[in-house]
Image (cartoon, rainbow, N blue to C red; front, top):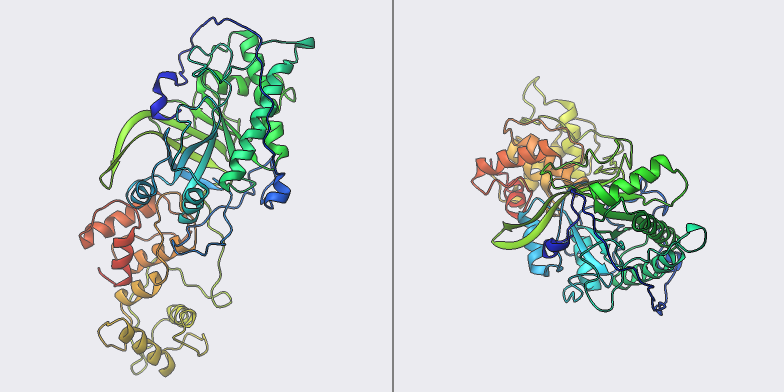
Length: 483
C-alpha cells in the first residue's frame, strides 16, 4: 500500500495465479485485549461513523491530559500513506507546507514491509492527533491465498483457502479472529482512541478464484465482527478491481451473508482526487464511508522535505463540518464585508449591527464590559483605544479594516488547510472578509476550496508563499492587520 511496497500493489488489471495450497498453522495469540469500553469510552457506535466526533485543530501547547479525538472522524480532504512512519520533524514540516491533513500508518500485521517502526510511539500518535492530523491505522496481515507476492517472510501466512465443513472456511475465520485481536492490542498500545477506524490492507488478488475469494470474504467478515466488538470502527483497503469489487458484489448480491466494513479505502490510481470509481456502485458506502488512493508511489517535496508517498482523498463520517458556535447570546459576528466604523459625529452613527459585533468581540477578549446594544458609546471608544494601544496600532477613534483583521484573528493560531473544520477556520474566514481583498467567504468554519483560494490571494498580496494554507506567517500578518 505504501510506496515502499510498490512491488506488491493492488492492481485494477486482474491477474490469475496458482499457488501451492497447504494447511496453515497459526500460533495462538497471547496478547490480552482490553475491551474498548474499559480502555476508553467510545464516542461513536462501532457500526456507524456518522456520529464520530471530528477532531478540531488543537494548539501545540495542549495539556498532556487533553482527550484525544477519534480518527479520522468526520473529514473531507487529502491524505498520504508511506511504509515507514515519518519523523516528528517531517510531520511538522508537512503540516505547515503540504496539502495533506491525514496520514496512513502501519500499526500491525506480520506481512508489513516495514515491520520496524522506530518513530511510531504513543507519544507520536498523541502529538499528531493534537496537532490536527487524521490518522489511518493500517494492519497488513494474512493475504488472499492466490496473492502471488505473499508471504513475504518465513513467519507470515496467507489466508487459508480450505473451505472446511459446509464451506464456512473455519481456518480463515480463526486467522481473522487472531488478527483482529492483534490489531486492537496494537491500537490500544499506541493510544488510538476507541471509536477510531482501524483498517485492514487486503492486497489485490484474482477474484475469479472461488476458494481464494470466499476465504478472503470469510476472513474480512470475521475480522470486521471482532474489531467492532472491541469498540472500533472498521475499514478495508483493497484494489478497486478485486477486493473492493468483491465486497461490493457481496453487499448487493448476498446481503447479510457477510459482515461488511464500515468504510472502504479504494486503490484506484486514476489521478482524480475524489472517492468514485467505475468498479464500485454509486450507492455503496455513501455518504461518509469512502477513501480513495488516487495516485501510487511518487516523491513529493514540501518545505524542503521529500517523502515517497501514495496520495489519497477522504470523505468519511459527516465530512468536514465545524461545530456550531454562538457569541454574546446570539450576536452576529460573521459578515461578508466589515468596512470602517467611524466614531459618531453629529447625526451620523455607524451601523448598529457591526457595532454590536465589535462590542461582543471586544468583550470576549476582556476589553469591553458595557451593554451589547449597537451604540458606539464612550465605553466603546475607550475599549477601541486600549485595544489599539496594546497592539501598537495608530491611535484613532475609528475602527478600520486592519483593526477588524487583528480582532477577528486574535488568539491561538493552529495550522489550517483543506479539510480543517473548527472555530479557528471561522476566525480566518472572518479576517479574510475584513481584509477587503475581493473575496466574500461564507463563514462556515469549514476550510474548503474557496477558503484556500482566498488564503492564496491574501498571501500573494502580503508577499508570502501562496500555499493556500493558513500557516504561521499567514496568521502573523492577519493578526498584525497587514493588507
